[in-house]
Image (cartoon, rainbow over all chains, first blue to last red; front, side, top):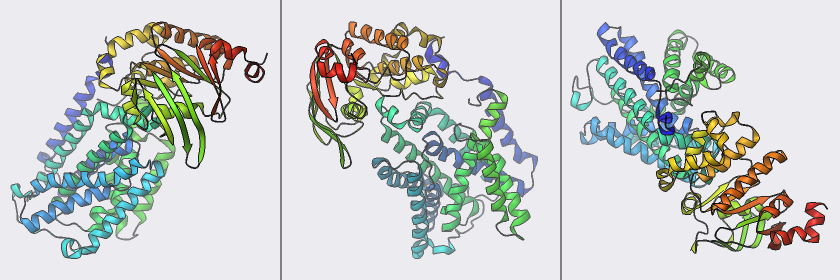
Amino acid sequence: MSEKKRLKMRPRSGWAAFLTLIVALALVPFLGPPPYVTHVLILVLLFAYLGTAWNLIGGYGGQLSLGHGAFFGLGAYTSTLLFLNYGLSPWIGMAIAAGVGAGSAALIGYPCFRFGLRGPFFALATLAFGLIVVELLTAFREITGGSLGIFPPYLGNVPHLFQFASKEAYYMIILAMWALIVLLVRAMRRTRYYLVAIREDEEAAAALGVPVRKYKLLAAVISGALSGIGGTFYAQYFSYINPESAAGLALSVEILTVAIFGGMYGLMGPTLGSAVLTPISELLRIWLGGTYLGVHLMIYGLLLILVIVFMPRGILGKLEEVLKRELEF
Amino acid sequence: MLSVKGLSVAYGEIQVVWDLNLEVGKGEKVAMVGPNGAGKTTTLKSIVGLIPPKSGRVEFLGEDITGKHAHDIVRKGITLVPEGRRLFPKMTVIENLELGAFTPEAKAKKGDTLEWIFQIFPVLKERRNQTAETLSGGEGQMLAIARGLMSRPKLLMLDEPSLGLAPKLVAQIFASFERLHEEGMTILLVEQFVAKALSFAERGYLLERGRIVKEGAGEELLRDEYIRKVYVGG
């Protein structure tokens, strides 16, 4: 077997499992699940999508971003405001949201990578960026509605304007988005490989001729664009956005938590993380949210600490250890 | 081939290399020796673009490459095998090697290069699907050198390749350098193992506290009284 083949070869069973999963998930709406189950599944897929987008720069690239909520929120506001002010279909707005997400990621990424801000310094810079975006979205109230947010008008079932009467339609859309992002990141095999080298030893990678800055920026920009697209989906599905919920720190933390919890060194890690964490987070919110405000966040934090201590490579890493095989495909 | 003129390098306020002049001719094997902290590693990193020089000029094949990015310099044909190997521990031997072939030119020749490398270091062929962290010290150093060769350099710069290796392995590593030299490779070697390096090299430089204090033919430096007294011990 040639060396090239060996590198490209992955177990076929992985492909089969992935396709089966997609088909199974696509059949769920036909079983007539209660709306709340559909809602939780939509959230699971949305955070799996966002975690996978984050993982490109945060996991593979090793640059922990605490500002992904900002790319997401800017995307949500972009398509919503374009629709409200210019009647532009959010489907087109979604493409522009991708551009805004990419642009804002470049805006924060370029100076950070140019001046060598790494590790905790990059995390702090992106954290600050996220907080600034929330402040700006709040301050420009004439445009954004300030901290009260925006309610786009509900028009009924208008598919070409990205509005649907049923939750199932949104479910199918986010399912497709998730499947596509997994396939996209999977296809970026070479880029991921260089990113891992940069994460493991930036100087060694540079000495081998890997343009470190270029690859970091590329990962940040793609990650930002994909997060912006996610923002548009969120705005359409919830038909309400405000600065805190659509761009706030809590959101940024939730995105990276899903990825770290699930396993940020693997393609399916964020998906696994979301599949476990998002339902827990939702259930805790229902059980405890009303009576003991904030308790669900404490339990959530405790879970996270336990995972980091006992499974540093996340659920995916633990699973691979137990099954003694790589869960890539 | 490589010509360094008046190179000064500083980390912020602290200057570590002062007005350094260095020449490496095509097909030559040159050694730069000196104690810990003399600025040898800094000089190499500055040549390959990992640290921007404060002043001075670096020319390669007649072209000014001063202050260019590392990826451009690697593409022009200089590779640095860094001190301490700096392998990617979780990647396999083959994956480490693949990373060495970043430039389009190197990628196109990857198959041939691998064959060539496995001839020089047969043990890497045996270990090719193992992760780098499972290699012994000697194998790890071989992989680091091999990874550097993947870019098909014209000038190979080696930073302390004998570090932490048993004498037998040091001999083996140096034998591979001899072989590369016979095949026409230009080599700039940095070593603390002064006797070994100077008997290997055709020409040598002694670096102390960031300045070149002696230069000459390898054998000549080996016979030098100061070097014998301070570095060779005998």
